Length: 187
Image 1 (cartoon, rainbow, N blue to C red):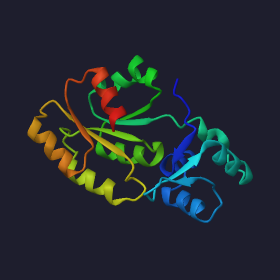
Image 2: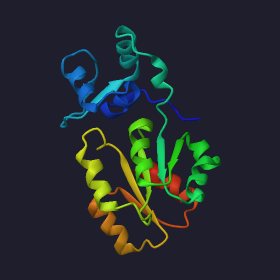
Image 3: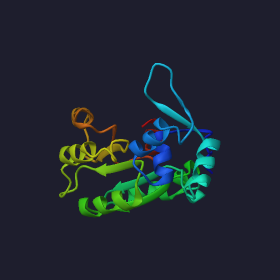
């Protein structure tokens, strides 16, 4: 079971409330949502009790708090990768997992599922990894999304290339459950 945090980032509050992170920043900056700034930074933190009070005052459903677990979208036509997270490794980590077998399906799923992490098999014929990364990073609502590149043909050089193009991590297939869970936790 995932532990509930006592203090949340604006990105986490945005996911819970189903709004853009900049909307949460606006609530904070206008004093509607109480919290604090990290000293020496522009980052904001919202105590959970303040968020609950805010949501109640504004008639927002509190069921978003229950879905604050990490959402993982796996873009891979190999069911083995998705199966790793559907099994005990993903359940124990408190992940919600969805999968897509094509770039088109992933695009639809990103909008509806709102994942925290996207695991991408960069070897798929319709996946252009660098372009996918550019498109996601260009959308302000998608910038917090963490990207993990996977491939059976992953080399150290290719992995470094993926990091330079904007991915947060890379893994060579076949993927061990503990390696995938650890990588997700790191990003």
